[in-house]
Length: 165
Image 1 (cartoon, helix red, strand yellow):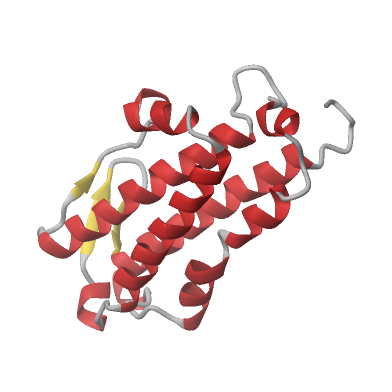
Image 2 (spheres, rainbow, N blue to C red):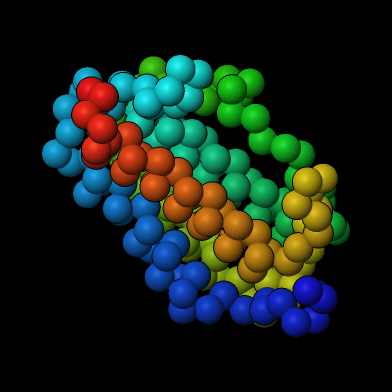
């Protein structure tokens, strides 16, 4: 798809998802216990606690990337590797209440930042080795899809129908 056909406006769908999508995590984990939060569905994969820690780190990094895209000409976003991020390791040791509080407060910052974007801001381009060059609006879509993917994983771990935990 050519850049000229990609929207550069923050539409109501983006705004609504930024404001509410993360709230589903609280709904999903509200009725599970600590054993379920720490249960790994597969060896080597993250548990719910680790996945939420990742979302906290990723959201913080994404805010920095948006600021970078707004202040630099065509910045390059390197691949994010949570397992080698010291902040991820820190957040994995934090308690769930604080993790969720951080996720929600950072989301307010992100939503406020995105709500202030002009159409010209939305056109600003940032590059990534794997995902290519995209405008800020498409990077926000990417962020939301990435988060939704992990929310689905949290749901699967929390309500494992095979009864593994």
